[in-house]
Image 1 (cartoon, one colour):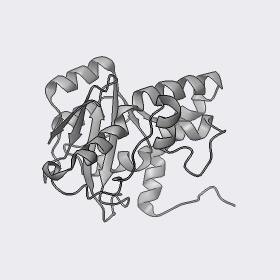
Image 2: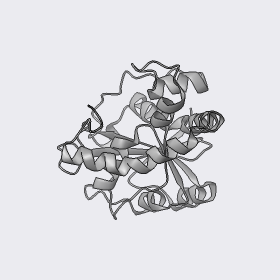
Image 3: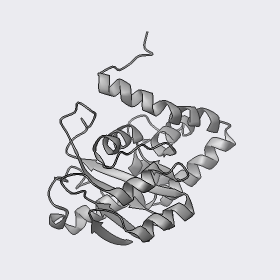
Image 4: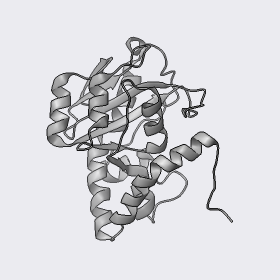
Length: 215
């Protein structure tokens, strides 16, 4: 298990390391999934690590949601932000974090999986647990997924910390495998177009509009 740090913002040395690697693995926990501009839920925790994933940072922002070092990383167009199901995580971080956060270089492992892993079941086969199991040979323990993440990070149990860390620990490997599959199957271009569309999809969520392409 990697070393787990809890903090209100990431340290400067991690910012520099991520700038050098040009990639960061990120995940979020909320009070619920209604985290849009008019939502009733809020962002509670941001997990982040580099590609080595030997040290994982669990960032619980202060009451003002001020995380300047973390935002430096998220705002850097040269750093690819790898997230599983970015539609909610991106929306929450851009809504809550200060100073203003705008993520432009994105790799969503769930979208990539849905495009290229056509052999997987639509019922859970594209979830993070399924990807970790296939590519890393590890079974994620999801028993504490529904924990109260809004409590102070000092109150998290070791199992809760390990669960949160596990959500980013294998993301670099998963991204590497999925990217290779997308390129092999000549689907990388359509995947990148989907990444460009995520902002529009989030705006539609905020407007309460769904199923726009249905008959």
